[in-house]
Image (cartoon, rainbow, N blue to C red; front, side, top):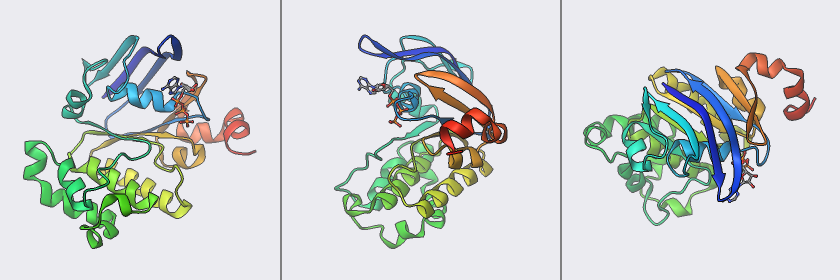
Length: 234
Ligand code: ATP
């Protein structure tokens, strides 16, 4: 479904991603993990058209989307749930969700999608008229995910969904990520919490200094001695 081939990305004259090769198959959960500054968010932003790709290809269902505008990529079914959430803070939860269902098809199915997101996150229904800016960090993350789902994406890219959240909320959000795949949505999880991310994933990529250092089945990465030492506190 998605393939990055020799992707290089720079901020100005500073290159931060080097020859990234990775692929994601339909229905998988694939984690991109690594420490601070490894380049995870940069991959997420390049994938969704928020950062230019210096060279290389990003194929989405066979079509090269590298350097296409972010709204075009969104229209092709790739939704990015950004780090920091970026909600419309002076709008209500409901209005944020309504904005997520921006295309014709999503608008036509809005009630069905709403029912699903309220099932995942009952709090959002209880508080649907509350301004998004007044919500806690965890609740804002729920709105961001729900808003992304409202567009009926084929692929959801989560950028650091666990950032700053309590462990039980992180677990709930990761459960939702997992149940997305049961609906045929493919998931990419960009995460610093290596253990939690790999536990729910099919496969993973470990990034270091802007390069793919390791890749493989999530279970195998969790057992890998280098991963254990560097990221799992062994
Ligand atoms: P974190 O988990 O800390 O967000 P990350 O793996 O997501 O880390 P990136 O944010 O992708 O890492 O950063 C990769 C590298 O790019 C880092 O060296 C960082 O300093 C650099 N970088 C990130 N944003 C910019 C920017 N706007 N301008 C210049 N350099 C940047």
